[in-house]
Image (cartoon, rainbow, N blue to C red; front, side, top):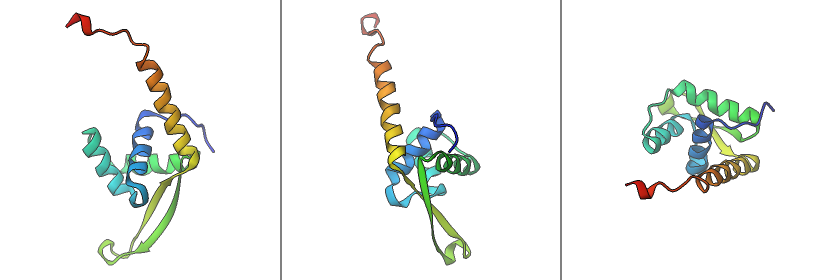
Amino acid sequence: MRGTHLGEFEELVLLAVAALNDNAYAVVVKSEIEEKADRKVNISAIHTALYRLEEKGFLESSVGGATKTRGGKSKRFFKVTAYGFKSLREAQSLRQSFWSIIPQLSTQE
């Protein structure tokens, strides 16, 4: 396993895989991020992030059956591991701890 640091883009990819549950493969992960984050993403960046997250132990993958519509190619499906969910919870907790200490600026409206 490589380093366990979770970057911002990796976190988005991990969240998308978690949200997609058993239907997470590169193309739909890309669509999910583009829709939810309103952010244009390159499919190569998605593939790189998915494989890097798998190498770090945040994801695991399996190959689905080949389909005629994909020219006989099979899909690689990704699933968040227990370690991946733990890391997402830790990232959420860290962000929340920072949000909770930001001085309220509502009086400056």
